[in-house]
Length: 296
Image (cartoon, rainbow, N blue to C red; front, side, top):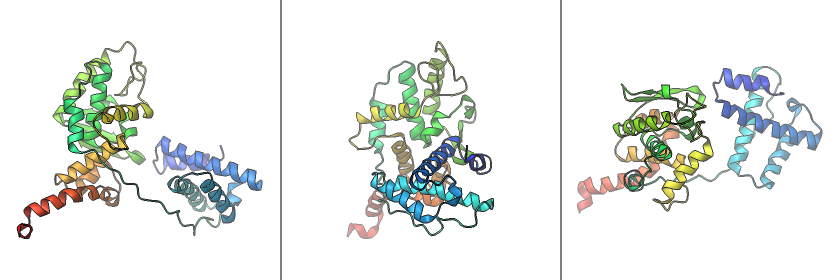
């Protein structure tokens, strides 16, 4: 494995998740394959910016989005920074590279009415999958956790006495999130159904399939998409939109931005501030209703 020292560095020193490290490695291997075919260069350390530029042009012409290309370049840049750090190279060929322009993605959250419609008006089947699916939706909406964080939840992450949930986020950073009473009620119902499964392979994990193995990402996406397709006409209906809705609705109700940042597990306030754009509509309503001059 040509990048083992780098991936070990990401895992052990930077505390990146295995999923993130795997993405970095795939990006690097793809780049190495390209320059090998184009320039017969086998050592990534000897590549110059002109060759990297050819790779970028090839990616653009293949129809890959600028956002995805920037991510791949970021992986390569991180590798070169590591090589500089370990004194394996004398200069980073990407030092003057500027990221490709990307259009800002507008993430439209579900309305409070849409979420309420799913959780209060839908008839979730009173069986393993029905109760599990309801708990998944409730956890996404009441905690704002990421899809991978939900999949990786273990039974030991829950402290029902303190009504809290311990989540292992990006870079293995832990955070504690309070649990609502309704979530705990559904959790108890789900645990009973879970314990009644004929066979459980992944015994430590909370969310399982009917076959007793850990949930996978596409299934979680399908669950959210299926239920919200019956309640919302929005184009995108995904776990991330539920996380987006969690943050937006909290801010609409006056929650402190720093508190929302901690709940979401963001490393910087800038990452959380994107959610304030959606709350501007609500702020305008409050402003018009409350300001003395608005009545004139």
